[in-house]
Length: 100
Image (cartoon, rainbow, N blue to C red; front, side):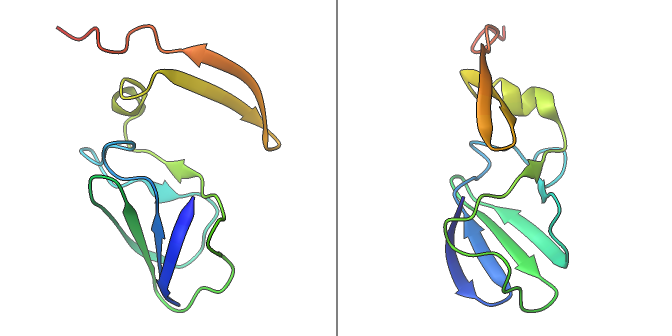
């Protein structure tokens, strides 16, 4: 979810590397043109555009393409199956916390 638009060419999302690991590459917004860079802190991500972007507003949700899904999955308790904006199913991540 976009939480801030500090500049016309930058936005902040509430997904950082604790949610979407960036060890194998930065997650990239899906279907968003003009992305120059993505940076992650622990709890937030910053998307910078090549120029002003007025299409995305605070409160909008972004889909992120992650570089390595295994790492993303084991950080969460559930995987949500969403179609057309509706949660259709919820799968438990039974392997969560089972690494040895």
